Length: 365
Image 1 (tube, rainbow, N blue to C red):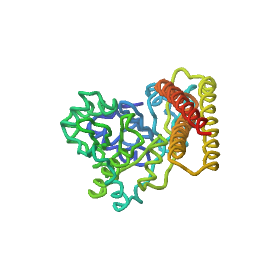
Image 2 (tube, rainbow, N blue to C red):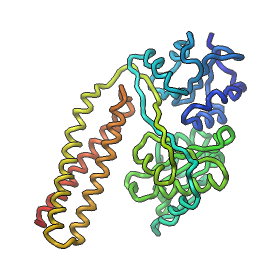
Image 3 (cartoon, one colour):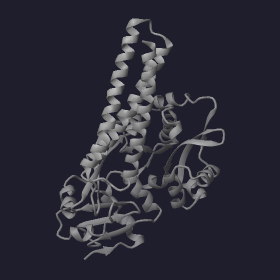
Image 4 (cartoon, helix red, strand yellow):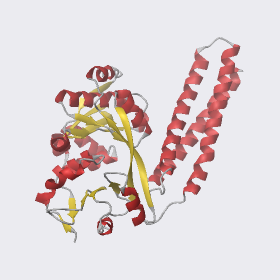
């Protein structure tokens, strides 16, 4: 019979989760006493399940007879973390519309203070790095900056508690917060590590701000002798981790289920033509610019055009990687659909940019 674990007993079962990915988040919620726990036997459990507000962590014997009794308690679209791949078959048998997302966990063992500090002196003059304080947290709430940070501040108990529990830095342009990185100390007592979380305003991306702030927080962690943990499902974040010195990327899956599935073929038919059109334009433009360079000496104009085309290519490649990652899952979450629409807008914007570049190139011929 399934029993709910009393709040005061939850910590007794923490050791069952040492093989789980992204366990820093579970540790944080445990220290905040915001976990619901279930098991089948207080003394000798076969299955233990912890639920936080957005994720389920389940462990034990995946072949136990009572496994379905636990799985029916997992809400639709909640992310599910399991200790090993054996659980995938169990989960797939439970739900018709079952899917997964790919994430990657990195090792921090190769991080070097010497390497990290190379990134700390590259901030443009009009920007400043500031430690996150109570006023910063209040500003995030007042201006509704970075939606998930608003939720995190409220979840922690308000600005004062957020600053007390966390370690963070931001980059400001005057009074404006343009980039933020933080990690919650609540996970440190259980894991001796914290999870880095980075956000940059869209119009300030691509300027190295995430690199600088990540390096600043990593420096703090290494000086205090605890691990700055890096776990991501984002291609840009993957590249940044490698740049900062993280190593041994280990891919894994986290799962979810939903009542209805989206038509993946329909989504692909919507996005593929636009993306292919963009890539063809990029390749044609690069060829044209190469011809221009052969005809005359390399000048600032052709260099500038090539730089613009290369930037557009990078944006297309990142969109392509992210869309493919989402479409590799067996089903697509409701929450993914607005992001797909944003990708379409971004693709169309890049196509407009490429048309302008093409006009400039043709005028130079």
